[in-house]
Image (cartoon, rainbow, N blue to C red; front, side, top):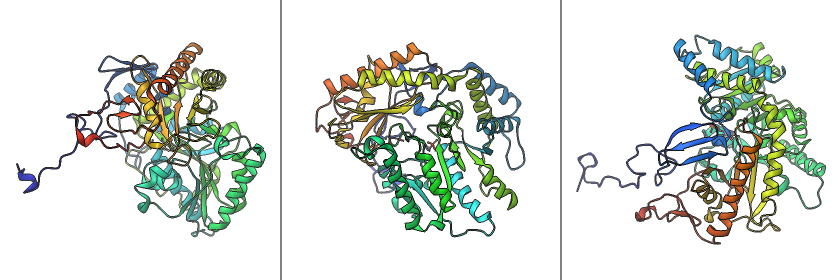
Length: 500
Ligand code: PMP
């Protein structure tokens, strides 16, 4: 049978996720539908009530269905929903940016509001380049960036080029800027040598960054880019004290900027409003996202230091970058109210106070598990890395799909808990971890219950589901049915869903 639209050709036959017209993460899988959400719980169409242990992707920091945020959004929509930032400003944008600048204790000068972390990173990369063009004399030879391996800074081509995550870059490698190079991540569990002191590890990484500046030409580098606590790419890996200061000193030595990507780890997630406050090293440019709007609107931002703004102010006086939806009044209102609630209810202080409890209870329950290699994090931002062998730290084979299978098991009865899976923990390809990142307003009892469920999923997975060498695909991820229709032979291939 031929279709007139395709002439003599058969219409393309693609396995689809039911009759959904959404281009889901996988064409082969139909995600279950959420019909309502409240506090820490997501209610699904099929009757399930899922504990959102990760606030989505470390986003829903106030939990779901917060009434004062909803009211603020509705009131803003009653006033107006949109105005173009080329011609107008709004109270929402003004008040949010003031709150953000104030939150840096005067260290930053301006805030630039966009709709996603990737866009915020694009803005930071471009701002760094513009800074050097506006210096007197202009440093037009500053065209390079140095970032780190096993890092993720966004999905758009500029941000993807900065990231060092092998698997996420692979498909697009030929399109990515060659002007980015990557040094080692700071990862105590994997990177620190046996018997090496933290101080010596930091010194080694400092020398590596210094060497890289010299290798590429120290006067060609715009900025060094890093996450203070590496989120999805490594599974909540904080830098040891002294590391960020050491990296900043190398940047200062060669006149390059320091860009801190706090899209995931910032805005209170790690127990300080900005993750850099833990060590007190102020970046030249900073990106924020997820916890900024808590999921009530798509919003992210770039914070710009006085040093950069002063140069632009004496130069062209304008950031050569703009977007239709920048500073969107409804998104700014949502984020403003989220931040006001966080301040009013002292939720960052709460994360700081209860973070050690979460850590202790995760460690008590899971530290001795033979397949838990490392538990690390800060505040309400914790990663659990899985290993085949605890002593050698040997990771699982990627085809065994361990992190995704644990996620799938968590989503099933009786667990009903959403855990955020990640892969490439060792080198961008090998390695599995899950993230725990609850809402900031959970209490001690809720944290205990959450950890009980996490531990139950992990134990059950390794005791009853995991079998070494079993391949993913075929409707299962290592022993856990994942909702794929097994009857369709086209589905019996691995579905490479990138976890981002
Ligand atoms: N930077 C980091 C550190 C992130 O974790 C992410 C998202 N996972 C991004 C940037 C990109 O953000 P978005 O997905 O909102 O574009």
